[in-house]
Length: 555
Image (cartoon, rainbow, N blue to C red; front, side, top):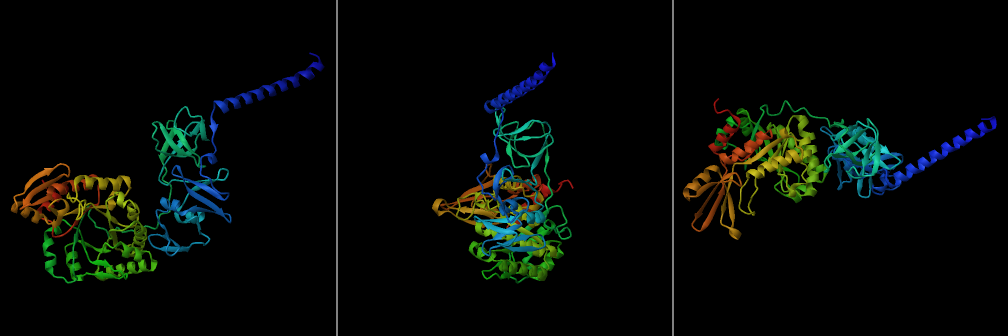
């Protein structure tokens, strides 16, 4: 080949290679366009946001927005409050103030300050404030206007192979994806209905499905800044199991005879809760407390958690608790009573609360905990069973600020309802299961409330009436009216039926049988103990059931 041809050869080869490469690129592009993987940008699937706004990705879903103002990032406070702050942020719509409450202090901020803003009816908190207060971890994806907030207690996975996609559908035929993951990348994973797949989010806020194979999963366990915890170990009941009994007290006058009916219980109980304190409409607290009562109970070795009630008055409770000054006054009065009577703690029994009241009640519990627990006084709260009508009760958050929650697993049927059991087997077990497994309340924070009373149902239909009876009164009634007794497998209780003239009498009996399945629930779920309502309704069957459940008969 002469020199002239050589000069022509190399440019032709180079040109040919360029043309071949270009054709291959075009071919691959055409193939990918019609047959290959297609990238879907987040803006195509995420809610529309403004120029200064970012969609928050949290727990595998779009969850509110963040925005930038004067160079600072602000988060929707509700999103931060859900897990990272554990409910410690509280907005008072009455006072237009945000509180951040720890175990020892309450910090307040006015809306419109540099740390807290209001936009479109939502309260926003500056990101740096969240980091300082709660240890919040997040990452901003500026290009696609996303903010990924880490799930502190979620599950993560390490991608073990390359070429893994976050797919738009959980299927091997899916050709669209939101992100291509790198080997060694960490993602958050969530359950998926399609077997063999997870739903996942990468740290840039891209979400999609991927195959479970090829992932190394683990628990996130990110470090949150917890509120300063109070060491209550010196004040708690020293035994492994709490046996608490409510004691109905109607005046502050005291004599030894008041305790006579409960002498038999001293061998079993370790906590007594006298119904001493009542909230009044002016924010004062009426007291039936008595120091002689305390001395006698203490002499038997029991602790005293005085009950504090709201008279079942939702309107009054709301009008009081919505004001910070009034909540502080109530907390201060209770602390004064704890010291005055030398008791061990307070049991809060606020009932019949609406959703509007409950959110202020949650803040009140935080502030009461902040007031009395650092001084060495225990705090417990009575809670209704999980149900559609009580789903707004923040039982898990109560457990963060209280020593114990008393699950009131009774009044399944009540005056005004149809006739039925006070506390059937499934009613109890379903309540415990829901509280532990669905709501996540720690087992050792739960004390199971049990009834010692039984309801006699008189008549039928529109003429139905009811009254509460003690265990001994039930035995007498069955004997007096020659009632037929049989086991009712539906409720797990003994059932009695008979007539007083033309009146139908029905009783779902509280006895060793009904107590046994409740105590079995305590053992199965390793609950902290039981709380019985109330002194005066029990008889020997209580102690036999308790012996059978918790003590070796051969000892």
